[in-house]
Image (cartoon, rainbow over all chains, first blue to last red; front, side, top):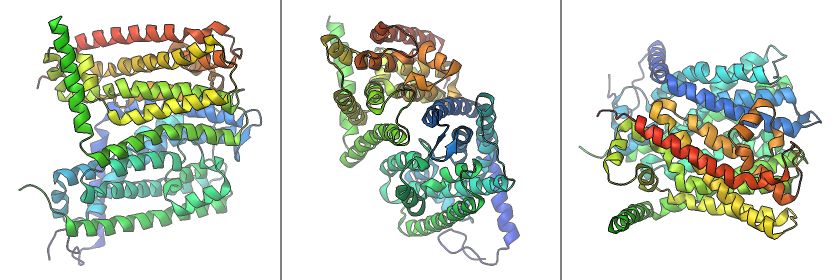
Length: 283
Length: 270
């Protein structure tokens, strides 16, 4: 068995089952780690619910007496808002600086010594975290919303599994984007600038503040094809509320998958370049 | 007298140290300034996009709503600049840093506010002011001396109001350290609420936010008075002038909550 640092290509004779076992173990520990903060999760659910009410009333007012806006009816808008508030915590759009902090402090050296590729191990942890968030952060708003508003329930059976695939893809994609933003710390030390740009851009361009379908169509197309942002939040939500026919739904999720693969590849590339130039500070 | 002079010098020293340290890294500071404008700019963009889909929102047109957005974003951004970093209180309580603050011979609240006065947020406050000025200029307001006065008083009252909300919600962390983003639901939630006409909202949610917490008097009622519109929800015309009174009540409430909170504070023991 050769070197076990991440800088060198991992041993190729390792079997796939072992890889999955490792991945699963890291994911579970990620789940457990975040499951510790139950009070914070409860506080987060309250906050998401308040914003659910706020945004829901605003969008319903947009639909107004006509009863629809940009192809969404009132029930679809309500589902869009409430599921969106829950999904926000699952994909974890904001507030992840673990990697950047570890790079700045030099702790990242520990990650590089492990026999698992850093992108893989961080992704596994993040999927575990997302699993917990799906239970603690996504379910509550999706249950609270229908108590106060008429919501849209999927009319096609195919929507449910497609939504599941779309959410998992969104988590992976969002992780990849956050990893890239954090990895800027390899070059910049302080990632405040990229982090601010990410926080600003992701909220608006992912469809959190308003459904992107409110924008002119050429702009929508450019955003969907040219940036990963709509694939983070808008796509899973559009799939859930059945805004489009099944074929378009499939197409959107396929596009999402492309972005996820592309961004993950970029993560690995950036990580490899970074390791070449990384000088861990301290003794 | 000499003592009071000493206190002022101490506060000024804290402020100067902050200004120096924050501007030490020029590029970082400039990015921060721009980023903070972006946050408020996107709030305005959201309103514009929404009016791209509909002509009326809750019975109000875009120029009318922009007056509310202007008052709200100007007041919120300024309050956020002056008092917003009280948001860090949970961390100070958790790490025990608040002990050190209490030990010093200066007031705890002013110290916390000056300890990291976020100068980068100056840009946001200025942008908010610009939005307000443009909104007032384009809304076709029939100016009278009274309305001019209200246009100045309402944002100031809003600053006091949002400042009080920041302080009051932060005191929750004295009792519940892990309250996380709970405070955001009232601070940022309040900002979003005051960016739209109250008529947009319905039921108990409207009652709680608009009248229970008093957010209706931050931007909606003053905007009605400025525009000379009757309140579709039936409050009399003078309600627009209630903003300073409501702000004072909020400030008194926040001061009381702060005092009780600090008294309740038990150190982490570290």
